[in-house]
Length: 89
Image 1 (cartoon, rainbow, N blue to C red):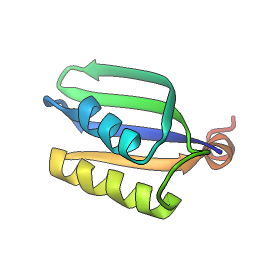
Image 2 (image 1 turned 180 degrees about the horizontal axis):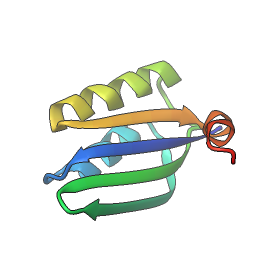
Image 3 (image 1 turned 135 degrees about the vertical axis):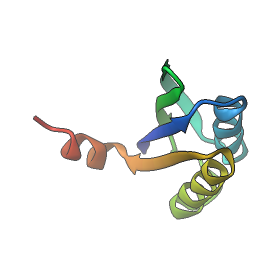
Image 4 (image 1 turned 90 degrees about the horizontal axis):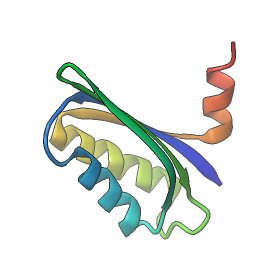
């Protein structure tokens, strides 16, 4: 199963490191990543493979959201199919 992770918020040190650590701890694989900083705002999208995760999908989603709260950013995890459906033209 693949999913899309989005991260948006005020830029600060450690955002990529924290999200990557949570994913590594869950045994998720980052397939692709794109990030940019628009003035002071950090935005990132990741395509991840969750086929071998060692936690529940809801557990991973909650952990990412909690870590995002600590960093002051919003972290969302969506199944790839849901993301595609929501962003069709």
